[in-house]
Amino acid sequence: MFTEVFNHTHPIVVHFPIALILIGFGYDLVLALKKRSLNPVGGLWMWLLAAGGAWIAIATGPDDDARGVTSFLEPHELLATLTAWVVTLIVVWRLLMYLKGKREFVKAPLVLYLVVSFASCGLVLGTGYYGGKMVYTDGVGVSANGTLVNPPVQGNHK
Image (cartoon, rainbow, N blue to C red):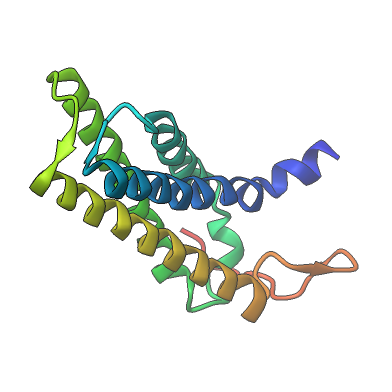
């Protein structure tokens, strides 16, 4: 059973950063619209977990299962990497604001922050879209009766 769970770490982990990024943006947007400002500490733990989850999702991605059997791997990997970096940027930005003693995002910085966090939503949804295409269109990582539906092509591994 442990091997089964370990072999499916990526599909288990990926849903957390997706949810946290979308909820984090929604939380920030509601507060920003309501207060016309945003405290960088409020919701910071959500963004920290989202960033950590994004990097763990990248680290657990089963690249070898997809090499040579799908055209969706490259855009999926690119969007995943961009997502992780953008969400990390959001966390660093919020931490710097807090450490510098600036208690609120207001006016232009608030708008820029919301644009960047909205972009992180688009990136994570695009990543999920291509991940879903790999599984549901090309059958990457899917097995039936213990046999891979679309086994990796030998010699295409990094």
